[in-house]
Image (tube, rainbow, N blue to C red; front, top):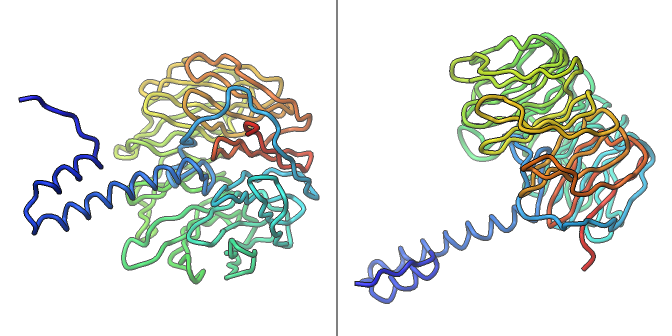
Length: 395
């Protein structure tokens, strides 16, 4: 008998022809599920809803970039742009040190709306279910309507919020929860719909980065030099691991491991089950502020040694490094065989993931401390010159 390989849609169709009537509804439902998954995968390639792309903060984008991107548009704000963008449903959401969160058209960069806060916005936005969540240096987390920027609610912390908010489905009951760290030394967990607090966890110093979320846990570092591992449901500490120096960036989570760099010139991989360091990487005596991008076998991050580093995920051994002309606090994004990152030298770089060779760069002129956002074949990044830039292909 000749065997034929069937793709899911065709397989469902073939089974429907032969199935008893009482199975038809089940098979139709399965087909709808496949179609839904395919649609969601396509939507993901066209969106970048939060800092580092998703709750585990892996910094990996779907889709592909053009070989030689061109500048599509730019938008001038009233202050340096250190925030990283979120991209959802054809809109770009990004903060500025002028105190505004901007919603821009992804197509041409025109302003859709702006929401003014009482302090600079270095935090990166999270877009979820028609709401954009953003922290401000005025000590508040805002929930705004994506359509018009109107305030749904605002939640006050005890100090400024520089890190991006994250989210998780409520462990019990309907709805979602929002997590955000503050310079008030606390991680705050809120109800996404109302802004009411679920729990608050206090640390020993500032929380600068975004909390990562995976498998019922949230993991983050801070200026207390500790990697904190908490239960999402209760906010109770599960583990704490001495990092050796303060952690300025965010942690990436994959395979029960946390990946991060710290101020005393070391990048680490920590096993969250055992609560111990598996490996560490030290090159030169310069701190790591950049958050890592993590694939199945590689970890990529920037350093204040003016290098973009790529390590083997299993052992932390150097695979390649790429030199820039300035410190790299920008967090890289991996898309296919390319790595995109900004540098304080005022350039945006695209590097080959396999060998670290330069594929393309663009000179903006002022430092790029924010991180790229990638969706729909476009790169969005802000600069300290106060401008938001979009790169892609002319169609």
